[in-house]
Length: 450
Ligand SMILES: *Cc1c(COP(=O)(O)O)cnc(C)c1O
Image (tube, rainbow, N blue to C red):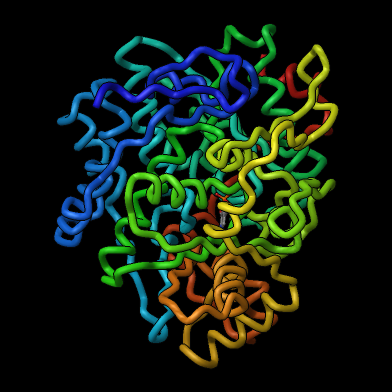
């Protein structure tokens, strides 16, 4: 198999190699890069993963896409440095598993992507003697994970935008207490506003001298590492077929799983678990896509997304075309236009989807504590609630994507107990914050970038 190329979902931009998708993030035609073909992993090779440490599984998978853009011995070291924390799988019931993705340095599943992507980017940038500026919009956890992962890297500056009122104090402190090459900006608006500012900046010729690149899940380099834990969960659960129930916001986690499935991992079905931002389950049911604008505020804040950026990739894989309509300056005038319908029949075979209400989240946190003596936080609760709602008599793997201590108020309110705080988060309390507050205004944002 030759080197994998990546094309844009909008089909106007030239295909590029892995290295370029990593540095560019978004395609110049505002589309998302997707692999032109997806390399396969045999059942035989998947079996071998059961005896490997996590970082070796990561290496085996990522190398198929990276090819010679990063020599294998170097990539191996990057994987080894990135994945120095455990990824435990708990069996709650005969047919119910929970994969813990919250054991990284910022206690969120975003660490999985950010820690490897940052290392790959820095590697490529230093080989080419280039300086990059990573621009990232966060609904809470991405910013912290990205800031932590890039902190101190010599060839990369990071600018993080977050919605002033939609994140917790600890989440904010993960971005605002580092300093050095990490700058934090609070926006008086929603996460969607932050994301719109960032997306616009990427395609603004007046900013091209900054070498802006994305660390959001529109970057394929962030997606790819997220396919690895699906393999890990699969070999560890040791079932023939496994259903994954993915708590979803921008659908980056889900696309990691979809990629794993396309590579050959026997994933029977995905349950797409969303909070009250229910655009996807409505779409699956009716075939009509209408984004939730503005996005609804739920306690699973990292999933308060009314128009998931990675949905364009999923629709593309099923033969459709989803894009945003723009004016000549690149400003989005209509979000989420379905230019061509995907194969909805196939999608319905491969995906179930449920929207989980705030009330159901509370119930599930309570139920899981009573039944299994486990504290789960709102994102994990959305996952477990959807798995129970699907009520399928097959092994299902849910995800806990953040540590409950990040949502201590919620846990206190529902369970009347104090979740234990991991050491990495405790350290933050004493640190001093530095950040700028701006309006939801593109020109104000550009001033600061310059
Ligand atoms: C980002 C995030 C999600 C949603 O993941 P997507 O890839 O955006 O779908 C879920 N839970 C937590 C804790 C997150 O930080």
